[in-house]
Image (cartoon, rainbow, N blue to C red; front, top):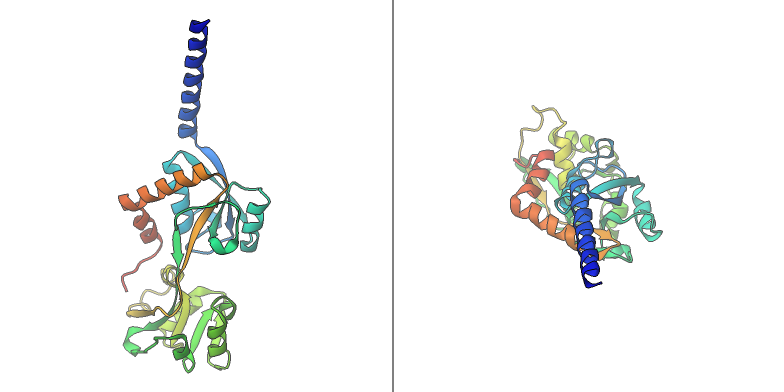
Length: 250
């Protein structure tokens, strides 16, 4: 009887080992809710982007395979709350999700951006009141009440949903200030006329950074993800991913 139980235990351990090996080889699938494209963070058309690649490769490090579930950004927390997905990207504590938040994956940071040669001083949001400004769409909603109160009376303030227009207007001196996330601006600069963008720019940090994580339903997977994320950073791969989408030489 003891020998029989020992054989049973051996077979169970062997089976679990095989299952683990298969999981590591083929990847346990993790369904992740992701907001529709926001280049360069998420590019749904090619299943890529800075944030997308970091999350995917952090999971890959620990034998998990990310399955993207693209939805409208406002639907991401809903998908997680309804338990339709295993994880949700680009979230933080403010979303109030009943899950386990990872370490910070990426930080979105809006800036007031100017041409260095113009020597424009911008130290506070109020310094924008008399400048010609082109901001991203709905900036007066996302950037808070003080920003909205400062720029709305300004006849030289406008918004656009097309970030490449911001790049062109700034470098051609048709707008003194661009309001944009730094990585988004640098990404779209890649598509501008190379002869136009040969000028240094200044990033004025007048807005608070917005750090984002991944919410997981399973704490074990969250812990594994954090380990994978840390490995990416230590190896230098984290910065390689960022550099593959944007150039920060100016």
